[in-house]
Length: 296
Image 1: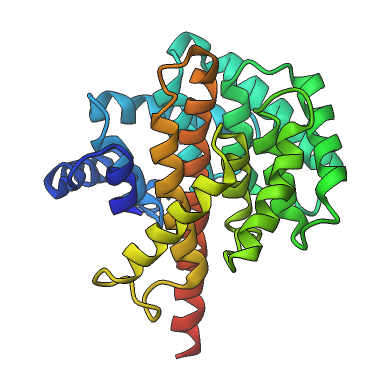
Image 2 (image 1 turned 180 degrees about the horizontal axis):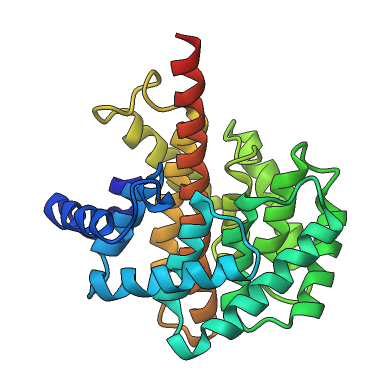
């Protein structure tokens, strides 16, 4: 994830900068702080890419406390949400963003109690950072969810997919395109419709790129990664590899419209979505490691 994060910024990994950020985090948090948990290295990586890591981390701690004051539970996902707010909004806007985030999350929880948890904090924050009307957007998310829930087996990921698609046009073009892309990828034996890759499929559906261009790019990215050291099948699963490959392709195509003002909000949201998916993958790998250790 560290490599992917730096690659998305077009930079070589700066291990020294990451280590400095790790040390800074340790110096400013207690021994049992969530910032020292599984997500600590990832947060240090994100901080190392900012112009003023100390200032951003200081603000991240402030936002983290504000989020907990709004009844968000301490978790790895919450520290990432705090970083999102601190790095993507002005201090004077923290209260508004957090209130919007709470509103989006509460609506998710009310409608999908068993599917909604700490892993939704990051997507709720992504929506909170935007300018979408809360009432209209939550209604549209539910409409998209109802339309797609029988198309995919994992309902939790469908909820996330709906949150991604609401960022697109107000019509159903993005929803229809998800199904078109799913079938196109399936025909090439590329399964992007699984739990951890489904939101990526949503991002691809929002990009103004033809599926005939996306499929070979993702296929090439997969093949390239699989042939690299430490990317063999024993080290990286097929779904993890596919998510990394799709992330690379998304980042490449997103760069092509960053200067388009009509796409500016989506570009920012893509960053948030990628952070959310990388966080989910880190949490998944950490859980798998814990289970493996316990079994041995």
